[in-house]
Image (cartoon, rainbow, N blue to C red; front, side):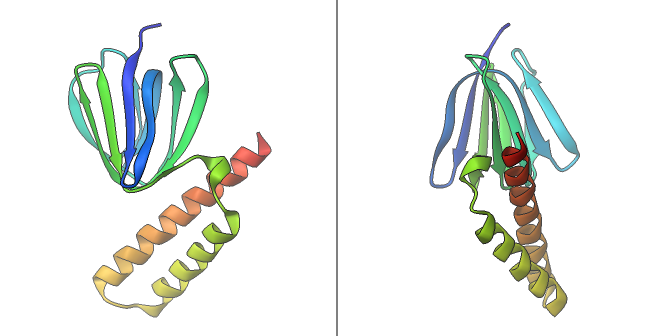
Amino acid sequence: MKSFVLKILAADRVFYQGECLSAVIPTPDGKYGIMAGHENSVIGVAIGKAAFTDGGGERREAVLSSGICMIENNTVTVLVETAERPEDIDIRHAEQDAADAKRALEHRGSVMDQRRAQAKMARAISRLEAKRESEIN
């Protein structure tokens, strides 16, 4: 199977950089699949779980915040604020974030405050789901 280079870059670190056989990235329109030879494009990344198969055939997952994905010349670069492995997620912290976001949504602040709270809630839910799935598997 042909491969491509995948780079997942978070604001604070390089989450992954290496050969990849396939990747599925969360986008505002749903999951977006990428394979070697994909046409050049730029897509938005939504809060959610990404999955990819590395060059050795190992399936990996990442919980991503929103960002952008650039596909160019068989290299896929994902730029996000945060990227975490499901097994590294602190479930208590994610539950607290969800509770904080719920309170903020109930408060009915400004439009900007509501959007921030919605994003925080989406990220917390995504993190909790990924953590629970990783514990089952």
